[in-house]
Length: 263
Image (cartoon, rainbow, N blue to C red):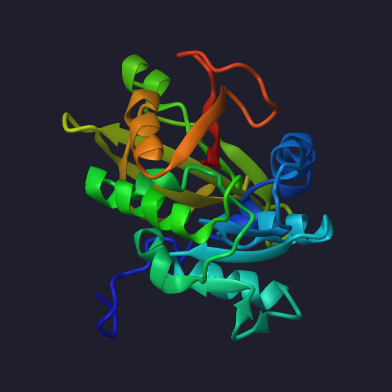
């Protein structure tokens, strides 16, 4: 706890500089436009918005977007980039728990996205169901919901423990930043997720220096565990994919991507 508030696990992680966002958005854009092109209203929610890259991309397409994230630091970073943060009745970014969505945003949205492995932060089934039900209450009939997370069917079955390293330019000349992510699965289906950043200075001693590291508790949701709660909340699961480029899903796919529609 800090100042009476729960510790922000992502307060020290600078995602804006650790992910190649222009390349990622170019890769995902056709699929996102395909899904949200079915939105009956061009007003959408970006759930787990982080530093706001997807929100800003959607605004460039003419959507009104409200980003929601549990991390106060990520919301602050998103707001600092945007010169216009909206007004109190239609804010651009809202900080809060996704399971409390009903208390955070009004109804009347025409679609929603929840991308980038946000969902595993909801570790209990009742919390997951409360999120889906709350989201359904915020959406108009026919609204699409695009949900993406890592394919935990593959990760858990294969016992995978890490992701490929991301190497990004550092602050100083001749310096690079390494972004690494480790996972330790537990028997109950949860995982200890450890994102860490290191400063890499080849030719100097020491060549590696830890900048930040944090343990985060996640739940590795399998495909079979998500479709039932979505339907119970009032969604129809329209299609299932294995990537944000629209590849078919299989147990070996990189991602689990669900295209659902509020019935």
